[in-house]
Every structure is written in C-alpha cells, then in structure tokens.
Length: 216
Image (cartoon, rainbow, N blue to C red; front, side):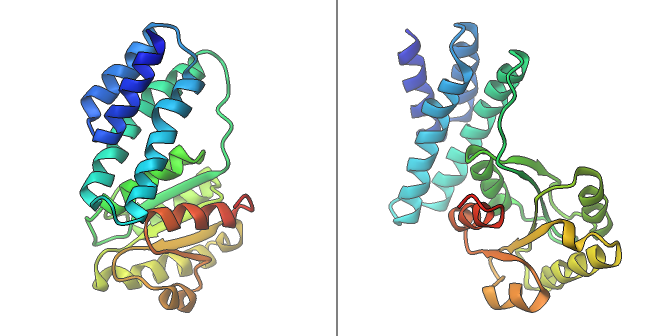
C-alpha cells in the first residue's frame, strides 16, 4: 500500500500535478509512513530526474515549473510532519531569495527556490518586487548563508548592484554570499557588481549555491 502511494507521489511530481501531489503526500502521512523516506523517494528523486531532463533539453521550462510546484506542495506537507515528529530537518544552509524592486517576474526564482529546497537548503522566499531595504533587513534578521537576487528585466538589473551596496553600507556584506540570476544577467555583470556567484539557470544556481557553502 505504502509503496504504491510513494510511486503515485513521484508520478504526480513528474506530471506536474500539484493537487495529486499534495493529496498523496497527505495520504502517506495518514498511513504513518516515514516522511523522510517519502520525501526522498517521492519528491527529491523524481524532481532531480526532471531537472536532468530539462538540462538535456528533453522537456520545456513549463514542465519544470509545474513539477517544481508539485514538489513544493508535497514538501510542505512532509516537512511539517517531520517537524511534528520532533526530527530536525538537517539543512545544508539558509537561502533568502527574492526578485528585486521594480520587477514582478518570479517563475525562474520559484523554480530555483523549489530545487534548492529539494537539495536540502532552507529557503525563505521574499517574493517579487522586493525593496532593497527589505533584503538588508532580512539578511540582518535571518543571517542566511546565501542571498539570491533575481532580475528578469534589463532595467531592474542595476537594483542588484544597489542591494550589494546597501549591504556594504549596513556592514553586512561580509556576512552573506550573494548570488544573482535572471534572463538578462551575465557572469560578467555578476563580477562587475561584486556578486559572489551567477546562476545561469535553476540547475546551475543549485550547483553554485552548494559551492558557495562548500558542499558542492
């Protein structure tokens, strides 16, 4: 019975069916299954497979987005159960993510957030159109290992620089690694503004995040 539910959950993630994914994750909790094992086999492995297929150009970005969303809702259910059972989820590190002020695009950021979660990071997503002061405030408050700044418009790219400058002024720049990404962003731009890393896409962002905390 349990194995069938895990298989059904993995299928839901691959199909990008968030409703089925959430419902099946809840069912595994009701059955008293080990949430860590369910998370690994029913969410992490299938999402990695989807990520690999996207990396090879076998599926479209929309497929990856839907799978990431399906994985995210299942993870919320399972992580809540892990915590309820009093077992700490061992995080690789904490990441604060957000799309910079003036930019409301968040699909790419959401995929990065979902994949980072799957890979073992604690992710705090501030959403889109995030004021520079809020990034600074959250770095001070949450003390993340990494701050991820997304910009999908050429006109909002300079805000990534503004955030880095604001962190310097606040005396917080040395406390956090800054990673930038987004369609118009380049490795050259990241270097120019003093960022620590550039994520070319969601898969690359996860690799870079692991390198930044010394586990990749």
